[in-house]
Length: 236
Image (cartoon, rainbow, N blue to C red; front, side, top):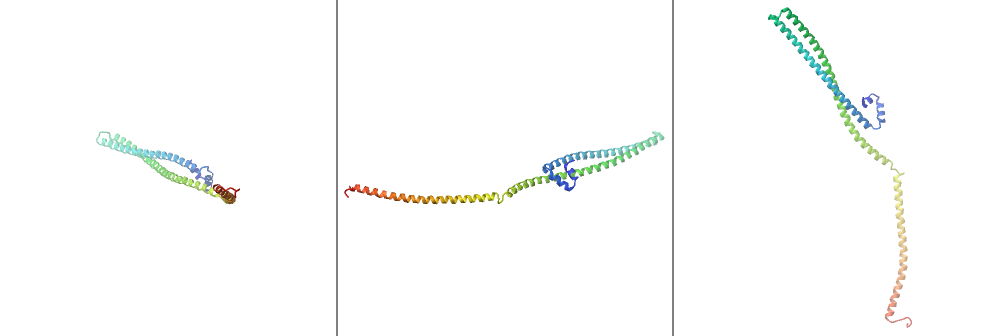
């Protein structure tokens, strides 16, 4: 008995409980469909056997009727022989009577076979109807299972994404991003401050160097002119 037959025998509430407890409902359903296909094969085999039995029984019925008609014809032939004086009347009538009794017996047997054939055919029709229902249900459940598999994939993907989104709250990732933003802003401000301080220090140093450098330049030029004019400090 397949899983669906077992499940269908319990209450609706218990069905949900059984499905919830299944480790893998899809695999269990696939197994159930495989078992139903096995049942279908057995049902087809049973249908073929019953159908064949109905055909054989009906054939035997027709054969009995043919034999009965043949004995009737034989009874007629016997009486005709007596009429032609080819056979003694008493003997012909006796044999004809035996032939008619056999005819009657064969018709009785034919009637019984015909009743059996009708019963077998009815059983075959019922099996055929059940086979067609089983075929339809298997096809329907396979289609529903295919749809269910696709829905499970989408559901699992959505569940994973939603779980990830649910784990992002103000106390975790967002807070961390805010702290990182503040730290970056602090570092940028500090870097700017250091730059301004460095620029200020550079300006003072440049001013000093420029002042010193300017005096030396003028002194040097003055000495050059004095050399050209052969002027020394003593003569002056």
